[in-house]
Length: 307
Image 1 (cartoon, rainbow, N blue to C red):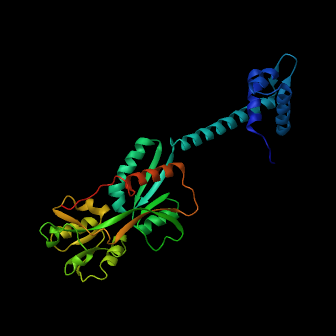
Image 2: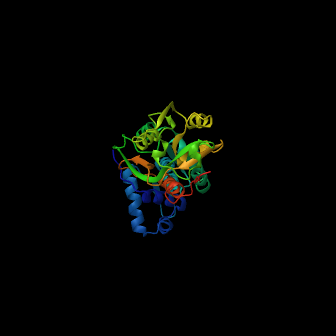
Image 3: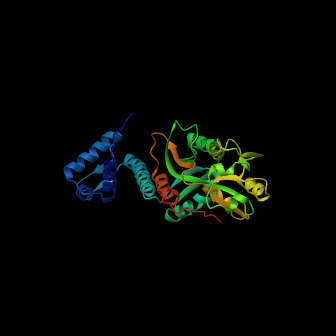
């Protein structure tokens, strides 16, 4: 059975129950007495029972009306709670947002964004997943993440993506290495030097392979998973490495030098990725705006100079 009852009728019921007078209840509902009486009659017809006893002096609830009163007040409370919750979501006082990002972004660029977001919207829960690109996209596909920050790859057809910023490459080497004396480098300057690589599955490695495809660089024999391992190997003089700017924080505490490649050389685009055709929640959209403000082309992310 489908019952078409508006919230206006529910509020009319409460007004009559509390005022026990049709004229006063009609005034409270900002309507005429005949229209108000028609509303009560419609409500009683829908309930299938008489809800009020009427006489010339007073209006009281019938036994069925008393039962119905409990239902009406429960419904009104749920409706008002639902709208209050929605208002909180719209005002970003409540909600949740989940981000999946490459470890280099999750460790260095995103914490400042999340901290500012927490200050602005303390009632919104934020989740951060740090993972490689394929894992990030899997989280997005499984709806465990609202948005992803990653580098381009082969599995993007099913998603919407746009460029957030470009991540230029640097050569990291020991301070006593011949390349450390340069202010800027070309990829060709790496010819003859041992290169310490990240694993082939990483987005960094895919761009480095493009950079070095026409360069007679030497393979050091090291292909590692973690940037901290790269830093340790470089520190011991086992080779140099090509890494993007957003990863350089991993190398700053060691006695190493980061020399930028020329601006026209290969850069690693960083993308914002979301599910295709799906509008982000207000909480997630607010996070995107902060990410663009902090990490985008004109953002405040840390810049690294030649040492």
